Image 1 (cartoon, one colour):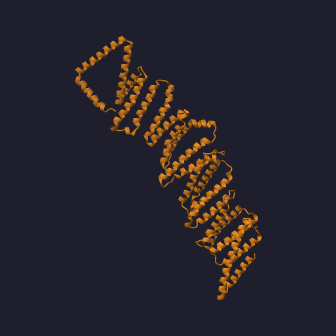
Image 2 (cartoon, helix red, strand yellow):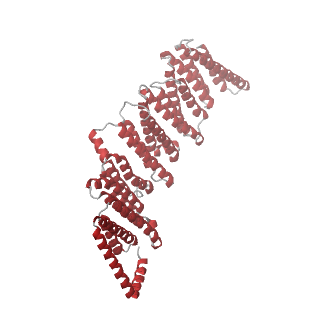
Image 3 (cartoon, rainbow, N blue to C red):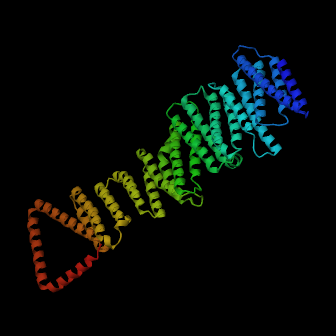
Length: 576
């Protein structure tokens, strides 16, 4: 204690001599001041070693040490009061740290307690620096007012290293606030703000980990995903305030929020790799908010491609969350049965609704939503393909027809045709009436509709393509009917096709109908000739008479018949 009084006496003497104007007094004043500074430095070093010894438990804390340091503080304040500079704050900060160590050691020699007090001192000094600068009206801070709060906060954070309890997260959080407050002061300090954001997230996870240390890893990942989602939305909603307070651009804050979106998505994915016991609604809620964030981020984007990418990412996450919810949440059996039976219908109708909404007026690009609308009915069909609910197929076929009409994309009708063919299969099977003819007729009609739908089949220049497609479709129908039925059904089909060909002026129908009819008649005549031999001779005589009549008529009316044939050939060239 005598050391402190000696230092006070030295500087009191320095203050007295400083008022004298004698030359010799000035020399003594400088010498006394130098000795005072050396003496104060020695005291600070001695008590620094003394403080280490206390926490290493070589010495016991005492009230006497606290009084000495207080007197040292008063001496430093007296010496530097008239001219405050960086060394003033460094010396005061050193002495204040020693005082803190000795006071806390009396009550509790825990390093965590000292760490908490240090970060509080650093935060208080940072706030006082702001207030002092405003009061004095100085534009530039002393460098010590930047460094000392960081030293206090850094020391407090270092003292709690490798310890996890209820205080460690708060220590990291206060240190992050100190760094953030310093970083906003100058443009050159901007990297400190990014470091502060990292520490804020770190402190939040420290606080969380202390609460969930006994949880399973599945529950831990769910909790971390929920925390990342919360931090993401806090940053997202506080863009205006943070950007003005921290002098950051909105783009900088968005990047930070995006990183937490990625972090939340990763944690949510990891949670599926481990069993969890807590309510899966936590993960489901986090997934919903993560999906919503990505989809909303796609609005008002200056770069349309990047905006669409965000929307696609939101869709992917939303689909994953939906699957996650179905697999993890226990619903009633009635709900599962309902979902299994009607999810296809719900998704198909949702596709039509999504396509009809005014997305551009809502500042979204239409392309991702249109793609979603086109995919949803197919997704619904695939999810209920084995449920044998063919109503979903009919609804999906109708919805794709509506979407094809609304979007002017005729090729979407192909999916409608596919679903109609699949859905009609059990109906034809149950009908049990000429199933082979009905199956082939359905395929025939489908191929004919392809000719109408396909843009590459349109126009006069593509008449041959249409002709060959009709020939293939009608040929498949006729050959399948000839093979499947030995009665007069192929002949009736041939007559129907002949009449269709003549009325619609379609050559493929006429050719294949005539071929089928003649082949069926010939086949029936062969059967009749083997069953009734006398009838064979009668039919042969009748056919011979018909050929003779045709030949005689051709000889008598050669010119008229030739003219008629040429006329029909010219007309025939204009047929489809």
